[in-house]
Every structure is written in structure tokens, then in C-alpha cells.
Length: 246
Image (cartoon, rainbow, N blue to C red; front, side, top):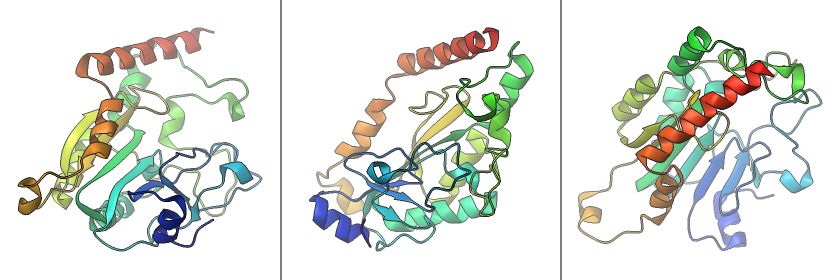
């Protein structure tokens, strides 16, 4: 466990400040994994947060122990929907402040438009595996989060579900450039969810020099080309149909 990003970087020897925020039980090698709340007995949605899966830093992601303008990349997977709209607007502005020019933000979360589409047109109700708490509906549950959990802190619940175009417009208003927006997510349920990769614009002098863009390019490559992204979403829809028929 570390007290700051600098301490984590010095201990691990990492050459980049890459922050995985709201990591839960998903520990990413090469990233500084940060989460806000130790596990509670009522947790059913964050996986196992044991000693081997503990984050590198316990911290509120609205106040991360790192300086401004020095972070290479920030990732949030299914985190921002746990905040109200005005809080997310403040958060992405705060992330923009932390990022260095050329730094990037990658986020995945439920897509309201796709949820409404699936609720209207999917002829079945796909559910998670029986082992999952309440065997909950894979689509409808994204509107409210883990509402079956009693939690005084409120972190399991979804406070605001964004439309993709709405979220991208908000990012542009902050100053980000959108590099990718897609439904072919790397986590959770493709098509139902969205993934956005956005970059803080580089300074003019940076554009005239060779700078290291390997991390953001590696992230973009993970999502594949247009054809692969379309195929991934189609397979996800077929998977939801299959689950609903079982």
C-alpha cells in the first residue's frame, strides 16, 4: 500500500503514471490501482477484494495524491455511473487538470440509449449467472446499480446513466479530443455499454517533436478495427439472447 502516486512509481519502477481508478477487484499490472472503499459484508458487485487483490492506494478519486499536469493516463471502468451528473462533470475536469498534454482518459460505462433499445426490442430478459446475487437482469439493472445491497455510503448505486453522445459532448466542452467512441467494450457487456477514449490535446511544441504515444495507441489497438468492433457487439447481442432463452 502506498501513500502517493510518486511513492508507487518509485517502488515499482514504472516509467509512466497510469491510474486505474475505482479498480475494485480488477488489478491491472503496470497501472496504479486506486479504490475508494474497503470491502464490506454487503458487497456483491465488486468481486473479491482480499489481500492479493487490494488496490495500491485507497483514495477518493476526487482527490488523488498526485500533482497537476503529470499523469500519462487515467482509466475508469464502470465507475462514473456511480456519481451524479454534476459530479462527473467536475471529475472529468479534475482528470483533465491531472493529465499532461497528450495524456488520455479511457472510460467504460452503461449507455442509456442502448439500454432503452434493448429493453424495447430484445424479446427476452437476459440474466447473469445463477451464482450472481439476485440472478439480476443484465439490462434493467444498469439503470439503478446494486440496489439490493444495503450500503450507507451509497457507492454500489448508479446515480446517472449517460448517453454516449451526451458524454462525448461534455468531454469536448472540457477540452478533450475524442479518439474513439464505441459499444465494443473490453469489460462487462459490449453493445449495452460504451467505451470512450479521449485525449488532452498536445501543446504546439509537442506536436513538432516526437513524443511517446505508445500507451494511448496500445489502448486504441485493444478495441480493434471497425469490423472487429461491430462483430464483438453482434456476438454480445446473440449472447444476451441465448441467456434469455435458458
